[in-house]
Length: 404
Image (cartoon, rainbow, N blue to C red; front, side, top):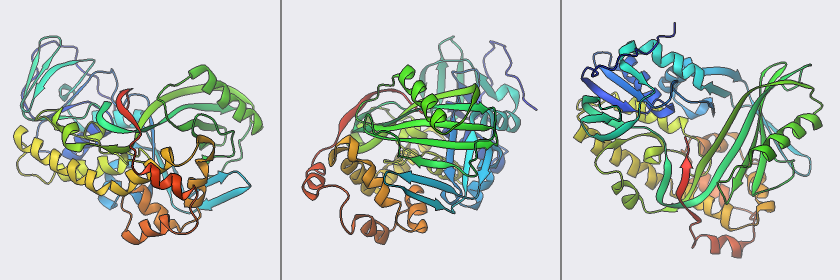
């Protein structure tokens, strides 16, 4: 049962761990602590009225280990036994990797069920934070054994690349849509504003989530135009739309290069999680695998002091940055080695590879052999352009704006 947040303006009681931001990363940390460290008092401070915002997060079942699967299970709204990709030239492939979608509504309900009502404070803004104290704009303060900042990325200073941006609609149809599994990439649409594809999640026979997505050089979203393109896609599919039940928008960083020490130094000594710590896949912008792994790791620590959390989160994020070198190189190739209209060729070639390789790629666990296989063979872009792209970094990501 959903618990309501008290409206009291009294000073919150001290806690062992204060989590700034109740989105995906912060919510998963709260759930992991409730499951594995129930003796600790955990507080979530969220600027919105609901936890998680308005989001659909999708991932492959292979992205998370068994323990991680248990953690995300309450968040899952739909499950499928496989998915489809489509590219120009009648290139279509059906893959058997199980696919999952989680929703912000389920995240909100799960965290509220796991924590006492007075440990979830919504509708509040953080004025300042130190490793052991949070001051709110209304003057109240929270004293904590440790503080971790999971408020998402509002620009990634000292990093460069491009953007994955999208508008998604849940459409209610007059008749069944005919999809039996998600279409994770339909790149047969007109290639505009970079690499464009449409993403479809069949939540029921007559309800489908349709997202118009772009790997773009700019972060600008023209909402009226993208809404019209979604309507056009539905019309071409022969779907009669009765209503649009939900809209989601997003602009996510695609990281091609950066100065990690300078990026981290801007945040001071406050511990960070999620995209606040650049814990996402550099090319796909996927964040669930990293959010799950980090949340579970935090539950194994004996020392959750603010100082220790700061050191731990830095070391974890620095290791993730080192491990992401290959994916950042691919991002540079995607954005720098081809014109926008040809970028689909890189993805089309990638999807001819083995399912195991594709699974490891999305989970951020590519092996050296995987990396060699991705780069081997006839290149999908001109070699000279590919080599030149490796010397560049992409556009600065410091002015990204709010993203999750």
